[in-house]
Length: 538
Image 1 (cartoon, rainbow, N blue to C red):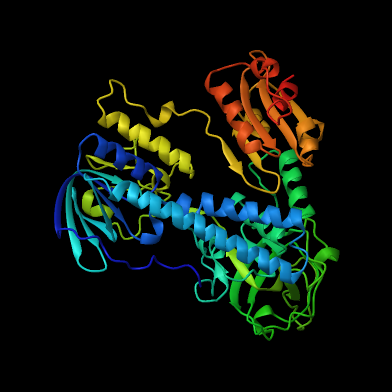
Image 2: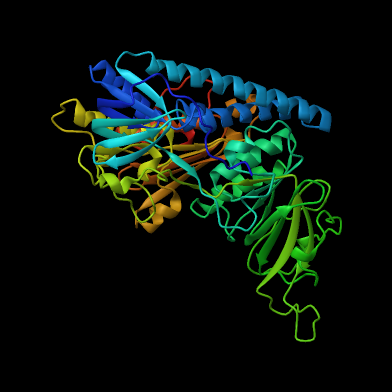
């Protein structure tokens, strides 16, 4: 199971007891930026990081940047046709992993030295836990180091949420995103548990490499928080890449398969076709008795099953509840059971704040009901002179929000007359790097409707954008929500090539309270994707 604790590593030469102005627990974006700023202001800073593999934080090591490096390599493999044969797929994947490791290693080293080479900053590698309101012990690979600090900043990020499924922690071939991005060999088949945007990014990426991808979704609606037309367009794009979806699917157990792969027992609600043999009693690796669930009667959901067991996760041996005489009963079963056999499983069921082992209670730091560090609008915890930045405080899990959190905290430390607060933050954009990137900011149509706003919907097919045609990337749609009487931009959803760049223009207009007519009449260079905003907001 590639869900592991960080490696133990040695600590820099340092005194076993340190008194400092500031202690930052975690080397993430907000914390490292704050450390550099405090150091420049002449304050002594200690930065504690649990693993030398995480200098610089999640984004550069196991998040944004390594995943985007692999996504770009996968896109190149698709364009070049390198995903067409087993030999070329393996070569492309091996080269992509090598490049990803080069990039992350280089960035990790730069981030470490950017702090550690400063006279006012001491970087200690080891796990930290509170021993009192302003005291922390850092367990290094050599000796524990006691640190007392006037101000403490918790910046420990988030960790993958692992569902309670029998076998998930003990079966080889089951990965979080961290482990899946560091494989030496490309899986020919991949099952993804979870269909949030992280899972979909990996589905798109591995499909581009040539992996046969099956996504298991717990409920019946795809991307339930997005507008139906946008969700349908995203799903169609992924299916065009070869990604298969199975809805209303709950993974009940995971175990090794005889062929060295992974076997999943999956329950699907609303299905009325099956066989009497239970998944758990099926000999491992006998997945050739493939069951195509396309023909199953299903009134509760839509499924996109595999149709070729050699291409995707092999489905076999559906189990239904037997009748009193022992025969299979097909009338109104609560669920049907399937065995899925695959080479690798990605667990993509969300991330949870990383607070385990911090002993926050020793400092009087409380948690929210969702397990995040409880903070106010200034990111102050329930303990005096202790703040929490980034994913650990339960806010949006983006690197740029961690940077924003640094701005909130620094505005309190630099003598500002009016500190910047979380409530001052406007219109957080997001981008999901699929084969056609999806970016959005503000309200979508369902949210505007739920809020009772009077709005108009603006739509533009990406195929109508000249630059998209020139780039041979005409897939997707652009959609915007505009308040009817004021022309105020309420939100935008861009499923388009280069949407991750264009969305920032829309955000800026919204931040400045510029009406939709501003983007409608703005002079853009040509040909660009950005100039599509002229037509979108017309």
